[in-house]
Image 1 (cartoon, helix red, strand yellow):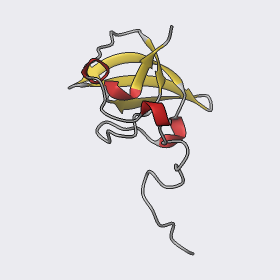
Image 2 (cartoon, rainbow, N blue to C red):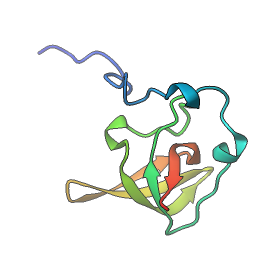
Image 3 (cartoon, rainbow, N blue to C red):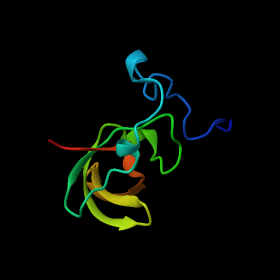
Length: 97
């Protein structure tokens, strides 16, 4: 068997690419945004920050905040009928409108 080479960010060239107008410094309000328990959020990755990053297969998914762990949020998502819990930094989350 051939071993698969690469880490968690392999094959994500376009998924983790920012638009040309979105490049540059990240605003502090986005970095320090807070979420309460029960808030619905989208998992949208911020490629410039690797801290608290989730696996790219969950990119664009919607979930619910079920708690906090340090500065990161615990997010409950449904993946193929199973409930999964992700620990994600708030910079990678967007609130559902």
